[in-house]
Image 1: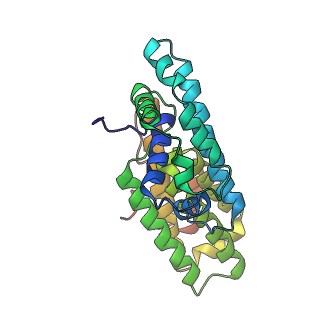
Image 2: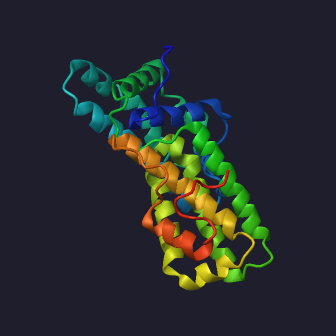
Length: 265
C-alpha cells in the first residue's frame, strides 16, 4: 500500500478524514476532533453537525461513484465499503470517542477505501486547491481576522460583519482537504456578495486601516478558486481576471489596487 491516496475525489477525501481521526488521540470525542479541525467551539453543535453531515455525504458519494462504474473491480471494492459507512454513521453521535468509532474499521475497510480513491482518481467534479495554497490563504485570512478585531477605526457593526464572514471562510479553508472547495466557494460568494450589496459598508471600509489587507486577501482567494475551477474544467486559465463582484469591491474599497493586478504577497 505504497500509493499516495489522491484527494481529488470523495473516497480520497474521506480516507484523509478517517486517517486524521486515526492519528488523533483515540480518547478524543468526535465533538472535540471536529471543533479542532474546524476552528469552532465544542459547544457549537450546529457547526459540528454540519461537518458530520459533510462526512456522511462523502461516504454516500463514494458508494454512488463506485457503483456507477461498470468494471468488476469497482464493484468488489464497493461491496466492501460497509465498514467505512458504519464508522462514518457513528459520527452522528458526536460524543463518541474516536477509538470506538474506528474500532470496526479493519484493514479490509482501509484497503477498500484506498482502492476506491485510486480508482476514482481525477474523476471528481470538484475543483482542488493544493496544500501550499491552502496554507498561504489560511495564514493570510487568520492574520486579517486579527487585524480586523484590533482595528481602532472600524465601527462595531462593520467589525462584527467582517469577523463573521472571515471566521466562516477560515473554517471552510480548514475543511478543503476533506470536503473539497464547494463549502469554501459558497462562503466566499456569500461574503463578497454581502459586502458588494452594502455600499455603506464599502464606503466605511475604504477609510479604514484594514481596507488594503482585506481587498488583497479577497483577490487572492478569488483567483485561487478561479485557477482551481479552470483546471477542473480543462478551460484556458485566466489567473489575472477577478470575478465581477470582486472587481466591484476593489474599485469601491481600495481603488489604488487595480482589478487586473496580482494581489500583494
